[in-house]
Image (cartoon, rainbow, N blue to C red; front, side, top):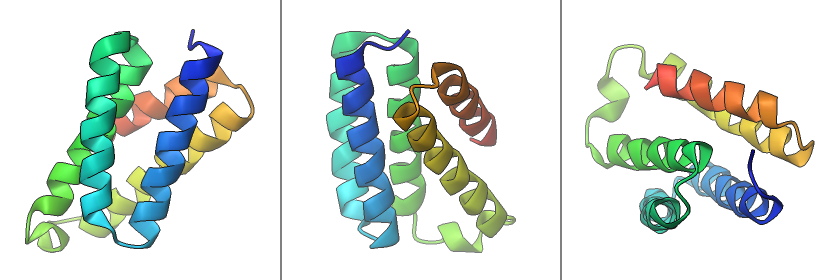
Length: 110
């Protein structure tokens, strides 16, 4: 179970990631990734670590020059965004089961 202060932190990071995605600010996503990986190494919670991996993976994919040319990129990207939005929504509603399901869905996408 995620502690309240951790839940707020995860929610804040996910909102920033969504904002950076909308602005196509991929450098910000990389910085958020680095910040959150450090945070996850301190707190050692499975869901926090999973979110760190999700953000890190996204930053690495977007770093690559030809990522948009990958087969099924658009479908993957839309599904990826949907799971992030759903994670945010679940945390806003304190629905930890739904949050965990969305983390798992996103992990399977990767």
